[in-house]
Length: 395
Ligand SMILES: Cc1cc2nc3c(=O)[nH]c(=O)nc-3n(C[C@H](O)[C@H](O)[C@H](O)COP(=O)(O)OP(=O)(O)OC[C@H]3O[C@@H](n4cnc5c(N)ncnc54)[C@H](O)[C@@H]3O)c2cc1C
Image (cartoon, rainbow, N blue to C red):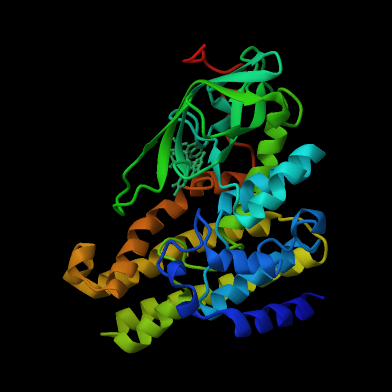
């Protein structure tokens, strides 16, 4: 079944993928938050999210097929679908916990890129300790009034909707008083302020809510039971950020591009040869691990500890590969984008962005805690703060 699907995807890409026909899809950020004509072509072939039900724009297949699409796109150097938070984070939360009305209103438009999404989880004092968040949502009849602040919200400046987790009961233990919403970003109560990153881009943002409004129709799951929806989203996140991409995430370069570069550059000495060979071996191990995750999913399993291990392996691998290139470039590796050609600029951008890999989607330390506790059965992390949250800043 997966093999037949892979053959179909290969045939499609053979016939359709031509970078000259989709010039706006070039560049390291293609396949990010926004969507272009290549994304829409993929959706016409129902390849953006084959794991979504047919009724909502997918094909009713599994996660394994979804990963096959990514692998094949990487193989031919084509960008993946855009609207990544909509398809990889918001959609699965709505599918698992949303109402029929929410599924109808949001899922298919998300796959076509007509509704672009951002994720409004992290706050200045709540990242790893997400359940300690303090943004408040207070009920006002059939709507909720939101006050507070989020941070590191990728793509919020371009988003139409945000998946928002907010505190709706400050008097119960912190995981219990949270509710999950789908908030309209186009409203006066929401201010988005871009954050400049060391890559020079402003991919993520601060988001301020001042009496922002969200309808009760846009609440996902029960009041005060938003943590269950968050857990669904975070499980998907791990898959999306590792197994889902198959790239040296960041500059959008693939390992094949690194290897081609390495062959042309030729190692200067045995130390460098060793370093590059080790990267090759790690790449193979990651590929085999990804195959194992795909096979597990194809057999009906759900993303388990392998997905967390894969994220740990791919994050440091991406960083080390970009670093190997930048080290070899020597002083050129430190020049600004205007002073080097596009190829070098792409490696530099990847090197700078890859530093985010071990933070986003749960830091390396947190992934190791999860693995230690849930996979290896080691004693739990020290938890001193399981009671009601600290006082809200916005109440
Ligand atoms: C590229 C990128 C995109 C992002 N996009 C989004 C987005 O769209 N939406 C969103 O909501 N968030 C987003 N984030 C935020 C991300 O989820 C948080 O940065 C991450 O969860 C870590 O939280 P923090 O930055 O508050 O660090 P902290 O939680 O303050 O952690 C600081 C350090 O302490 C360590 N630490 C904390 N707790 C423990 C513990 N219990 N045990 C051991 N070590 C610990 C951490 O590992 C880290 O090294 C993004 C981040 C990045 C880098």
